Amino acid sequence: MKTFLSFVFTSAATVALPQILQAQRTSTDYTIASDSIDSGGGLQASTDYSQAAAAGGIVGISENPSTGLLAKHGYIGQLYEVLGFGLLASDYYPPELGTTQLIPVRSAGDGTYIPVPPLDVSWSILEGPVSEISLEGLASTSAVYQSTVAIVRGELGAESADLTLYVQDVLPDNFGAYAGDGINDSWQFEFFGPENPLAAPLLDPDGDGQSNRFEFVAGLIPTDPLSRFQLRIAPVPGFPDQKDLIFSPRFEDRIYVVKSNPLLSGPWSPLVDSETGDSGDQRTVTDKQATGPGKFYHVEITKP
Image (tube, rainbow, N blue to C red; front, side, top):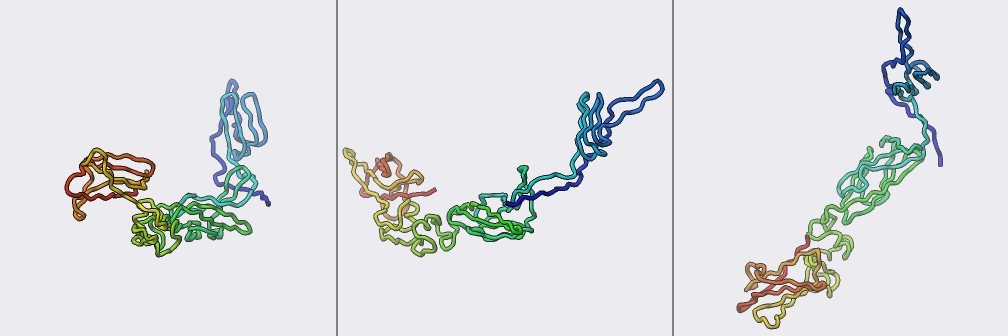
């Protein structure tokens, strides 16, 4: 590994301070001020003060122990060791279709970073959902179907550095051919892969009579005909005016509302008098007013 020694020069390196007087020279006829602690050069000392390497108020530290006065001057240069070239970012977890500022730096041996102008760096995308990097180092992210790693590279002369970003999936239904169809892109990729026409919402590729959109909402496997939402009606022993509505599978992250209607057409209404019990992935809802010549039921499922 190559190491380098560099000097950093700063403007306004000298802090202007008023002269600090230390004592008085007196006689019967006159009084004159003594030396200030921030002028001259080398080491000066007396009972009242000491002065170390103050050259015309430019550098060094001067102090007066008896009064607690201290004069500290800035330095015209700083010696440090350059350890290497690297990249930082304003946001390591940028959202999809967003931006993050790449920050090229040199690391110093004192634990600090020395900024490098982004225009001095050649930028490239190694992998992942970064669509472009401007000359100023602003990286733009692409749409993703799930949170995805991206790797970018900066080159400064013969040196290069890679940086890993984690592009976040914040818009679940915006990717490619699967965008805007009411189904999360990650679910379609999981079961159908990319750009598969069989993933369309209204299709039923496993032939179980339930569409992809319904199976997504219900938490089912759209490529398995045995993975189906099932509802059955059972009598309640000893209670002829009641019915048990038993359905599965149920999941904690879904909302289930059982509704009824005396006809197959017309508005459906939630049960007004019922009890609910769960056993594993099965739920039983007891309709305590299962009366009349006929009654139809259905279950509305919501995936928050």
